[in-house]
Amino acid sequence: MLSTRFGYRRPARFAAALASDLLFALSLVWRVFFGAAFFHGTDLVLVTIKVASLLPRRAVFLLLNCRGRVNARRMFSLRLILPLAIACAVPATTSLAQDSTPPPKVMGSMAFDWNELAVHKTPTGESRKVCKAPTATLDELEIHVTTLNPGVLAHPPHQHPDEELLIIKEGTVEALVNGEWKRLGPGSVIFQASNVLHAIRNVGDTPATYHVIKWNSPGMLKKKAQ
Image (cartoon, rainbow, N blue to C red; front, side):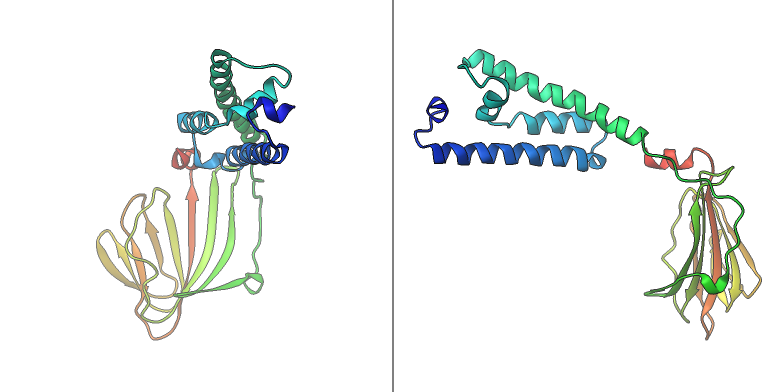
C-alpha cells in the first residue's frame, strides 16, 4: 500500500500526515500570494526558499513521483529544485499581478459642495475628506478640511516630503512656521515647505476650521514606496 511505502502501517495515520502536508502547502501559497506586499526583491526570494525547503519529503514524493521509490540523492535534488522553482516563479507572478493593476483614474475638473462632505469625528475635532487622486500634472492631489477643538494641537511638530497649503476658514490658530509660532485668523494662508517641521493648534475659544491642500509631484509617490 502507498501508506506502507512512506513508513505508515495505518492508512488513517498516513491520511492525517498527508492532510497536514497539503494544509502546509496551501498556507505557503496563501502567504506568498496574499502576503507578498510584506516582502520585496531578494527578501521575498530568500523567505520563499527558506519556507519551501521545509516541505516534508512525503509531499514532494507524492507530487513529483507517485509510483516509484526515491533514493536519498534524488530526494535531495527534488527538495532543492522545488524551492528554487517557487522562488523564481512567485516574484515574477507577483510582478505581473502588480503590473496588471489599473492605475487610479486621473481627476478632472470637480466641484465639492460643503454640505455634501462627510463629517468624521476625530479625537481632536472633525475631519472632512474632499479628494485624494492623481491629476493631469500631479501623482496625487489631496484636499481635506480639519476642525480643531479649542486649545487642541492637531499633531506634534512633524515633517514630510510633500508640500502643503493651509487656508484658515474660521477660528484663531497658531502655526509653527520656520521654527516660530504665528498667530493667524480667518482668511489667512500658510505654506509649509518640504521636510520642514510644522504644526498647528487652536488658541481660540471656539472651534477652528482650515482647509489642507497637499500634493505629490511626479515621481514622489514612487520614491516614497522605495
